[in-house]
Image 1 (cartoon, one colour):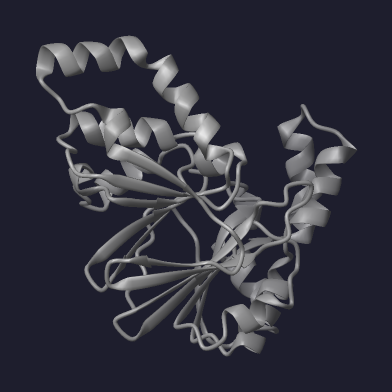
Image 2 (cartoon, helix red, strand yellow):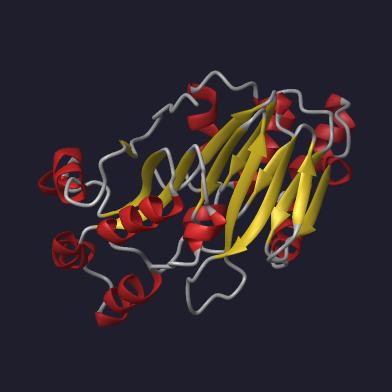
Amino acid sequence: MPTASLLSLAGQSVVIDCGLGVTRGLADQGFALKDLSAIVITHLHSDHYLELGALIHTAWTAGLKAPVTVWGPAGLVRYWRGFLDAMADDLAYRIHEEGRPDLAGLVTIQPLQVGQTVQMGPISMTVGQSIHPPLTETFALRFEGAGKTVVFSGDTAHNPALADFARGADLLVHEAMLAEGLEPLLARIGNGDGRLMAHWLRGHTLAHDAAAVAKAAGAKALALNHLIPSDDPDFGPEVWARCLAPHWSGALHIGTDGLKIPL
C-alpha cells in the first residue's frame, strides 16, 4: 500500500504520512486507533495524505477523545476543512445520537517550516527540506529521543545535503527507485505519458544514490520505502538488494507492507 509509517520511540507514537491503507496498517500492527495523537504529513501528494481524514474519523469512532495534532504543509488546513464539510451529516449524527465529542475540536493542524524543531512529548522532530518539484513544501524529518535518531527522507530527488541532516542516524528511511523498472511501470500504468517519467526522474532518488546518502551520513541502517516500482514481480526484494550491494554494506531493509524494524 502507499506510503505510511509508524514511529514508536521513547513511548511516543507518531504516524508519518497517511496514504491509502494507513488505518488497516496501524490496526495490523496492534496500534489502538483511539491512542492516535501525532501525525506528520511530508507533502501534499495523494499517496501521502489521501487517508488522513478517514484515519482520524475511524479513530474517533473507535473511541478517540484526546487531542490529535497534525503537522505538515499549510494546505492541510484546507484539506481538513473540506473533509469536515464532506462528512458533516455523519459527524452531526454521531455527536447528537451517540454522544461523541466534536471531532473538529479534537484536531489541530500545525503548518511546518524548514528548520523548525517540534517537541512531541519525549521526542523532538526537526524539519528539513526535501526536493520534490513542482512542490516546495516538501519535508524531510529527523526524530530524536531515548538516545535514538530516525530520519525520513520524504519524497525527494537525490539530495546530498540530506547526509548532513541525517548525520549519525540509527535508521535512515529513504525513498528509492530502480532505473530498469521505470519503463515497464510506465507501460503498465497506461494512463500517463512522458511527463510522468520526467516527474520520476526529477523528483525521486535512484536506489544507489539513496545508499550514497546513507553512507555519507554514517547511518547505522538504511530502509528503502516508497519503492518505484513497488509491486512488479520482476523487481522483487532480491533485485533491490542486488542493486544496493555494491553501494551499501550496512543493515538494509527493503520496504514491504507491515515491515517492523526494531531500533
